[in-house]
Amino acid sequence: MTYTIELLNMVKAKYSLETDYQVAKKLGVTSSRVSNWMRERNAMDWDVAFKVADLLDMDDQNVVYGLLQDKYENPRLINVLKAGCPA
View: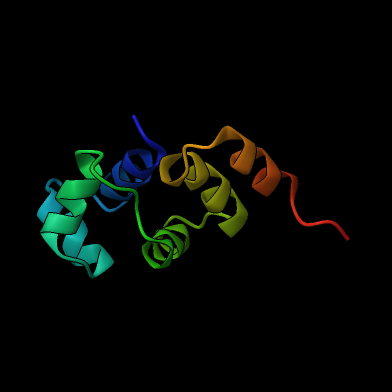
């Protein structure tokens, strides 16, 4: 399961949503976008991810790091991004 799917399932649980259509309405996106995320065709967009973070009262940084592996397959890139910018 991808982090994108985990986030969507957390939104479903917190707001007692039963369908992907209901999740789409809550997030202000089309049901086809939610369907594509649930089928792992692509990862959640950053703007929607931050909306989800707000809905779930999550730290933005945790959401970003969680989605990195959904969005990027290069482990070296992921490690660099997780390390942060040099001072």
